[in-house]
Image (cartoon, rainbow, N blue to C red; front, side, top):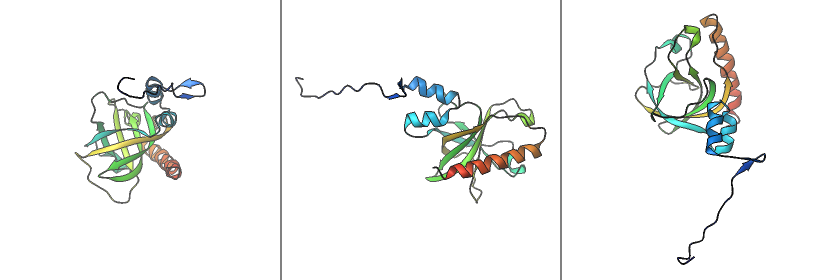
Amino acid sequence: KNKNIVLNVIGPVRNNNKDISSTKIRELIANGKIKNANSYLGSPYGFNAKVIRGSGRGKSLTFPTANIIPIEKKQLMPKTGVYFICGRINGLRVFGMCNFGMRPTFNENDLVMEIHFFHEEEYDFYGKEIRVEFLERIRDEKKFPSPKELINQLNIDKQLCLQLQGNY
């Protein structure tokens, strides 16, 4: 009061009679409830990442991917699974789908994040920094009996993501 500074105390933000807190948002992200988390955040959950070399298998499956690792060492990661995402690369906004998991169809054990971008041209992203924003979780990661069945599912996932793209 002595310095004529006005202080407005704002109560908790609520949704359906529940407080929205950073703890709740982190919990939603960790459980793959990305749409809910984004609603609470007011913008898409995402982070900056560096593109690294992968095995090159995506290209042979006709779904070339950019493998990424978060720039931040203690980055909060979403639940494993397949996501509809938006990437920001050199100012360009590009939609795509992301698999975060261990690629069980190929019996791998390392946790990886790989993104297939929906664009016509192939770009060399290696070593570049991108921003990835998670828009919706599509499904759990699962093991397919063969690469051909995985490709069939990837085509289904891509069609769903392309339909969702109109919402963003």
